[in-house]
Image (cartoon, rainbow, N blue to C red; front, side):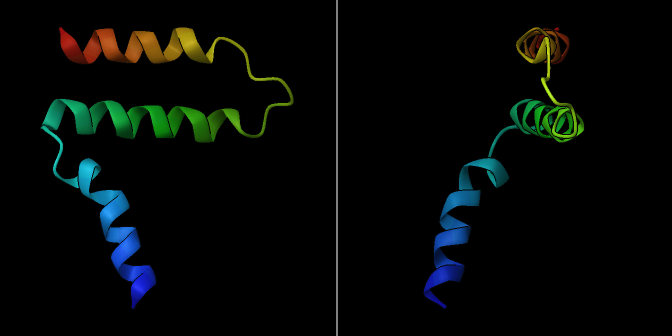
Length: 57
């Protein structure tokens, strides 16, 4: 049960985030998952900046 409390505390900022922030988090997580299989992922920072710019606009 203590572990469940810790998980909910960790996820709280994500679940209570405004829709724009939640969308950025989801898209960045998806991007990171897609890059995990690459031996040397490239341009991930550029991709993250692009995601943020798209969501902000």
